[in-house]
Length: 384
Image (cartoon, rainbow, N blue to C red; front, side, top):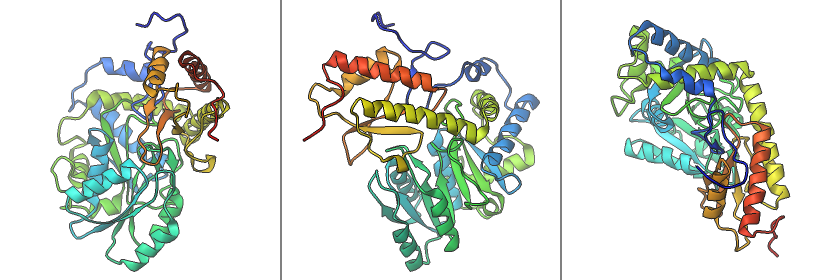
C-alpha cells in the first residue's frame, strides 16, 4: 500500500479505479454474488443462465428474431466462434480494418482457411464507404462483411448503421464485433440488419471477464451447421445443445454468468443503453474537456470519438515519461492504458465501468498532480 501523503481514489471495494476498456471497475454487488457456488446442471443456475440469454437480444431490438449463443472464454473466443461458424468454407469475407481488432479478425479467418479481402484505413479514420461499396459491387464472391463497432485501438466509433445499410443493399451478410460498444452505443437489429454480433461480459454491461456471447439472427444461425472449424467454438452445436437441454455442452463459467446476471439487472435499472451510454458520454466529456484544458491533444475529433476510451498524444515535453506518469496515477488510485497505435505515440484513458463524472474529475486532479511531480508545465507547450 502506498504511503504517499496524497489522497488515493478507490472503488467500493478499495481497489484502484480502472480507466481501461475492460476488464473494468465493477460494482460491489456484481462481485459479491460470486462468493456462492452453484451446480452447472442445477435448476437455480439454469434459470439464471436462461434469463441472461433471453435478455441480451432485447438490448439490440432482436427479441423474437435473434437468439444468444454463449461462449466460454474472453471476447475473442466469441469473435472467433462467430467468424468460423457463420462463414462457410466456400465463403469470402470483406474485413474492414482500422485497428488491432480488425487485424485480429483477419488472422482468425486466415487460420481457418477462409478467403478474405481487406479494406484498411488508418486507425484514426473510419472506413471509406464508397470504396467498400465498390469492392462489393466488383466482387460477387464476397458473402460476408466484418466490421468493428467501436475499435478500442483508438476509441473510434465506426459508422455501423451506414455499413449495415450498404451490406444489406448488396445482399451480403454482416458480422459485427461490438465488444466495446454493446450496451453503450445503440444498435438496432431491425434498422441495421446483421447475422451476428459478438460481445463479452466485461465491457459496458459491467460484468467480470470470462464469458462471451454472440447474438445471432435465428434463421442465419440455422444455416451454419457444419461450418465450424473447431468443436468448442461451434455456435450451431452450442445453440442446439441449449435448444435440447437448456445446458452448456461443456463446463460453463458459472460464477461469471451469475455475476453477469447481476450486472444486467443493474444495467436495466440504469435505463439500458440510453442510461448507461448517457453516463459514459458525460464521463467522456469531463475527461476530454479536462485533458484538453491541460494541453493534451486527442487523436480523434469529437465527431469520431466513442464514449468508451480516449486516445491522447504523448506530450512533447522531454520531462514527460509515460511509465512515471502511469505509475504516479496508479499510486493515486487510477489505472490507465498504454497506446496501441501505429499512427501516433499515444496512451489511452477509458471512461466506462462503474465510474461517474466525479471519478473523472478526481482523475484529472491526479493527472495535474503527477505532471507537477514530473516537472511538466501545464498547460502543455504546443509544438511550433
